[in-house]
Each structure stands twice: as C-alpha cells, then as structure tokens.
Length: 201
Image 1 (cartoon, rainbow, N blue to C red):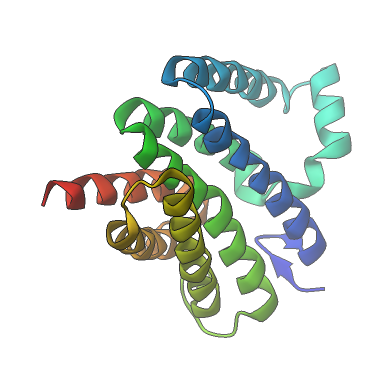
Image 2: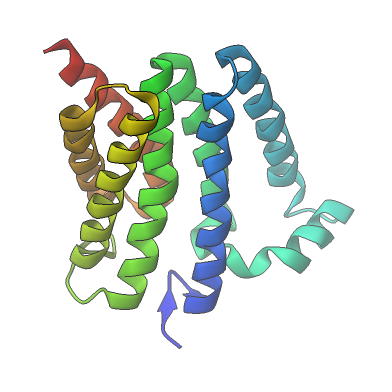
C-alpha cells in the first residue's frame, strides 16, 4: 500500500473522516450565537491543548491517544502541533474576525473541500505540482466548494454566489501552495478574507 506522509491509504482515510467532524463548528454556529460558539470552541481548544501536552508523556491520556489515534498522526506532528490544533485555532480566529455568514461558509469550505481534495487526490491523483497536492484533488476541492456555496446560499438566502465561488478558487490555490501541516489554518482564513474583501468592492 502506498504511503501518504508516512501513513497508509486506510489510515489517511480515517484521518480525513476525523477531519470531516470539524463540520460541527459551522453547523453549531449556524444555530447559535457568536458568544456560545466561541465558548464551545474554547472548551474544545482546551481539551486539545491537554491532549497536546500529555500525548508524548507517560500518562493515561498518552496511553489512550496512542491506542486509538497514533495510527493517524503524521511524522511531522510527532514533535509539533497536530493539524487538528491548527484547525481549532483557525476556527476561533475566523469566527472572531469575520461576519457570521462569511465565517460559516469559510469553515464549511475548510471542512468539506479539504477532505474532498485529500480523499479524491489520494485515490485518483496523477498530476502533482507542489506540497504533494494533486491537480485532481484541486478539482475535487473546487467542485465540492461550488456545491457548498450553492446549497448555503439557497438555505440562508445570503447572496454570496459569485463571491463565494471566487473564494473557493482562491482557497483552493491557497490549499495547494500551503505546506500540508498549515493548510487547516490558511484555508478558512483565506476563504473568509476573500469573501470579505470582494464584498467591499
């Protein structure tokens, strides 16, 4: 079985399934206030920081972590912050800085499009350009993003069709050029920033 960042395809799929759980952030925000959502994310962030601190030490947390999640930890995360930590940080920043509808859309893009790009790219990727990101994965990112923009606009009646599509393309480029360990941070922020700037034009 081919290895992706030191992990088997099966473990990468499991990792991306965990990543997809981050969709709970924008969904929670959709039905709650900014304050409640920030409290919710801060609790999750504290929980992740505890895991970060104890996962490489002799502790019960380390034993549980290694038992259930060690197979999905990439090599560069063993001595640095996990991608999940960056994801929660980016969610906090996106919600704090940007308008609610913009933040929700950006976080949906980060959760769904990044997962789509990775899964499709791992399975069908043939043309690689930079940071082990494939052209096929980039297309999957963009097409899933178009679906998200359409569905979100229909649901909320928030007119972000053209700007949303532009933001998807910009965030897909950002995902492609960003080192993998940081793309959870850059994707939602670039999407939200793109929407905000184009709304001002």
